[in-house]
Amino acid sequence: MPAIATTVPGKIILVGEHAVVYGRPAIAVPVMQVQARAAITANPRAKPGTIRIQSANIGLETILDELSEEHPIRKTITSVADALHVDHIPACTIRLISTIPVASGLGSGAAIAVALIRSLSAFLGHPFSDDQVNALAFEIEKIHHLTPSGLDNTVITYAKPVYFIKDQPLETFQVGKPFLIAIGDTRISSPTALAVAEVHRSWKADKAFYERVFDSIGGIVIKARQAIESGDIELLGLLMNENHEWLRRINVSSPDLDHLVSVARMAGALGAKLSGGGRGGNMIALVTPENAERVAQALRTEGVMRTILTKIDSTRPLFE
Image 1 (cartoon, rainbow, N blue to C red):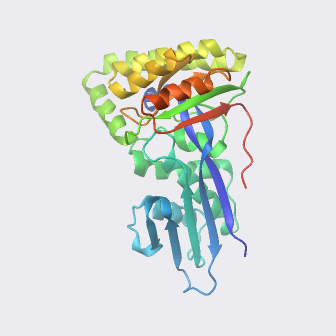
Image 2 (cartoon, one colour; image 1 turned 90 degrees about the vertical axis):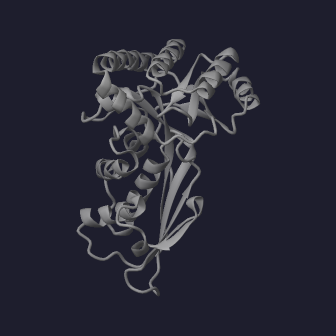
């Protein structure tokens, strides 16, 4: 039997992070330049039921039974088997490869889950639909982020720009004019779960203030969708700037992020902001073909370890 393999993209949040956890909308888009891949090969000569897992990215080489029951990879595998009512998975080797930086706001955990769910369901003879993949991946996200919005797994599963409101039907939408986003890595690892938990504690202490902030961010997201659909990229940049200022007010930015945002704007970016949980991870800048390299170089000069330039349009990628 040939290997079953699935590749999925990473993701960035354009606008709406943190507020999305509290029922406001957010917009996220896939990032094709970073990917997660799950490949499964049958091992007919191995002991029945032996599932070997290899992931060089995290230094993992083990068998399934040696992982704790709550380990995200084991939980993903058992969730697929349970959903298909499969008692015994045939002996196989699962290889997980990812170029998505961990704890950087690019959806690394969700991408591994989505890729593994797709590959394993196909390996077992019953490929899941997008909706099934998304539902299972959301359950795995709860292990990573405790109270996730569901945004990461959704945009990665469907691999299209997503307008997302928690617990409401999925909305993908058309991009009126393709645009370019430069992503800059601060080199500061910042697990989303920690930032989300801190915001939640602050929200409980001052709900009136935080609800006003989240309402303001939600209004920005609505305008940003209209700007994207109409191709008004200049307006999108202004809205990204405004979103960053609200995120600063709820203390999820950092001096490093604020500095890089300022550097990007001074180099010609139409807008710039943090992306994801904040406190570190990635910042994003809306650039043009003419100034993209200038903005990227300015960020690298200020210590950004890696810059990624990604084009946002409405086309779903064709991975094998």
